[in-house]
Length: 448
Image (cartoon, rainbow, N blue to C red; front, side, top):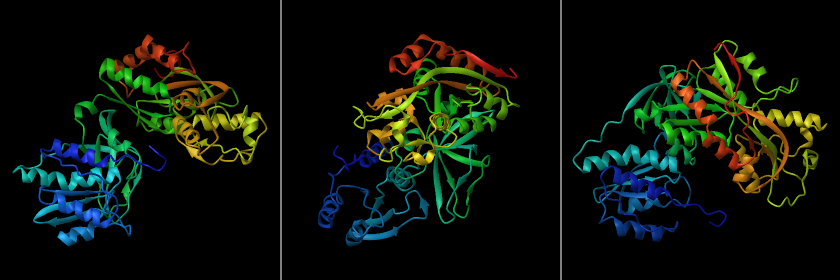
């Protein structure tokens, strides 16, 4: 695609939902935001379809012609619904046929279609829409909501410690990955300011509970080895690994609250030079945990292909013309970067972009790839994934802290066997930037 272009995916997503619910989708060719062309398109389809869906035209913009065209041929019943996402949706009628104006953002489009098209499609077949399974959960973290709308939050779900926990996914009507990852949706009713961490909630499932019961959760630092681990778990044992990138300290806090089976961490103790154990002894002294090495990995500067700015070390990024992209506070890479700056006698104020933050190594690499930054500290594997250059600076230990009381002995053994196994070691080594000589080694344990 050329810069500025986007993929039109909504019509294909909605067409697939139509097929799933028993309807025959008729996709019209794309129509630009021209009132006469939109009018002609509606005129073409209104006699051949039982339900008319106008994608991506429903908004508050001055060039939104959907509502006026629906009014020309029929009647707009509702323009704007007190829900989030999906507030700009339109409901109307033309020739006694339902018309739905679906917002352009994928999350909004899917939600509006579920709420309004699904029951209509089933009723037109003389059927009642099947009930969707509801699951009682507690929510993992505080989730704010606007008082004036019913808010729908996409979540992952896992059984931890004998009860189900819902993990809110990134919110925003344009975050398409939430649709791919979500196990279900919870509704925060209007008039309620949100949910407190640990509060009860009901989740409408979009995946079978049998899959949820085979789900491990990891919250913490991001690493591509976790994706390799997830792939092998799925292929060899039909177990799913759900990963949330919250940084190393975020992972330790999730362990402390009992919200995750294990966490990836790489926290440097600047006094001892050791990784992770100091923090675990401090914050998880009352928990039973096992610290296992996943890999040792190269950290360094991720830079543009060909190194056009001729960067060679951290000293070079103090140039105000060099745009740096940092990790968030609490991330192990952020702690390492601050330590390295101190070693080089550099101040954060000397770094252009020190306060610009991303949450994963791949996001750092993507910022450099897309010319939103010139450099960022990250792992070699992320640079390779984005076909960027890499200046190695140090090697660090990336470990998994596992809560043995929350992970069954069977799942723990499966996890350890995979980490120590030939397939994991071979795939991580082939990717590059990893040393795997102590993968699967138990570094320390507490209360086990």
